Length: 75
Image (cartoon, rainbow, N blue to C red; front, side, top):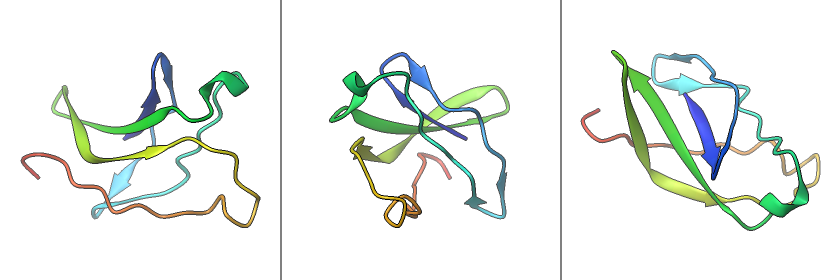
């Protein structure tokens, strides 16, 4: 699983029992603030985008550990 904002993609993280961890967004510049974040999974070589999205914004360290329940078509 990974997240995408325009051309930036996070490193892929493992999904186990429907759960993911350590998905870290660290785009290369402040120009990414305010952009839509989309979430993707690849199953059997086919990429699918989650129905949910988020907006990239500055967060404090305490706010940085958020959890999102994601739904993928066909899952």
